[in-house]
Image (cartoon, rainbow, N blue to C red):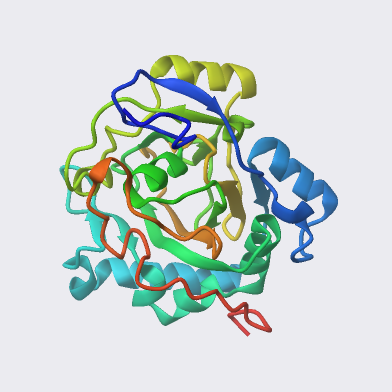
Length: 306
């Protein structure tokens, strides 16, 4: 058994589920490393564990990004790659990973100053891309993403030491109440849910379609939701959601006719690079968790679409 004295965020050990108080800051260095978010926005992020910035990208910019993502989902050479994940029981593409490597446009998007400087400000350091992907929820058949904290998986399966990473979701379609928008539990980032269950080998092959390990137990999830409620990120295309790596989140299936799509990037601090996975697990592939290099993202002087 791994004690919390050795690892404050021990999970998937032989102990029962537990709720553990966060040991790390939410906003690092008082948010002074960069200067794009206001004091009120930083306070909201620190309080809730997320921040929604509506209409950050124009309609023309969204159209370019959506066209690129749709091109990738139709490209047989990309769909055959391990980076492409299909829906359970369907050939519909659910996610494409490592899009910042597969697409020059999406590589520039990671350096977009409207995104990268927010990550630098919150994390208080230079940042690198831990993971990137395009997420699709096709109309009428897009499956749900069950409740989870990304950090629990990144800590156990990737060896991410601390809660010093954030996710950035760029909405490429309108997210409404019916097409499976992102749901977040405000304040949940301040509690780490230690999960039960020994992680199977190559767990990622199944978890990217449907996660069964590293998910919160019902009692812990109910307590978090009763304390903070559930906030649905309904917003127009071009909006961006930034959320802490430990914020509990999920989304419903999409049985509406309207597809949902986004580009999702994880910025991690260069001071928080990956160590060995926990529990003797084999490191996950590079397209899921960057290990070969931790080069800082260099924000563009102007927008990626200039």
